[in-house]
Image (cartoon, rainbow, N blue to C red; front, side, top):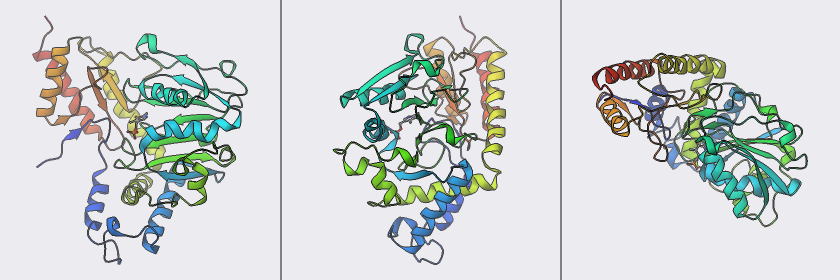
Length: 363
Ligand SMILES: *Cc1c(COP(=O)(O)O)cnc(C)c1O
């Protein structure tokens, strides 16, 4: 059985050398005589794994010492609640940018808890086809934080630049763009991401939080949601998602060997350009995202005919390119081209798109 080009938005492709290393170590890890899956999280072998994972992630992302790195459970969706729970106490209010479905869910979660939260900008009326412009004067100066989703996985949009929120800490959901290119961590108060897009299998959520923001947690918060408790216990307050953290460690090690995030960016820019250049060169497919907001990781396009879209996804799957169907809420097609998607995968997709367009003329 050959591996396909898997364009899934998440869980998504992992680098083959990482899968092979995990396979080789699956039954017996090093000299331990057991699988990482069977290890006590308090054992010296596992201690070494989690510490190296954190050290390599810090090196990759150039995370300064005054930031904590937490390995949590519950997915990015749990952080939609954890963010206000941990931060709102700073000033009692927070501002949100709603640029897609996930940022909308984050906003709703904070509202649900009765906090004073406000949406300062949204592109909902334009079907989220671009990222709103954010300027410091839109933000309440006494907001505890501003929340954004940095890359909108479903709509295929991304902030081209870090938004200016003045002195108000910026909180970013980076689930679908983390590790795709270098980011200046110092411009953020908090970065969080579920692992299953561009980091590891599902099961671990990474939270990178500036230390001075750990002091504002709602005293009634469930202990498991308190970042400070997790930080004080090195993510070992309870059993962490051990195996997924190990997989994240393998991915980080691999990315460092490949030249780190500068090298990833170079690769990802080329992959995305191949696809967008083709989309811009023809009129069979329509790319709905406005210039300046295009995602490098999730590329959306439609034929304009839902039956053809459906046929496209099913024929592409037969040709070895799977999961090209757009999110159920938007339809059309979406090619998720994270770090592990090779250039050849995108090239094969573009060739398929040309062939499909030639063989399926629109009436
Ligand atoms: C996938 C995704 C989520 C949801 O992540 P879970 O880990 O499934 O909770 C949230 N935000 C973004 C940007 C995503 O891509």
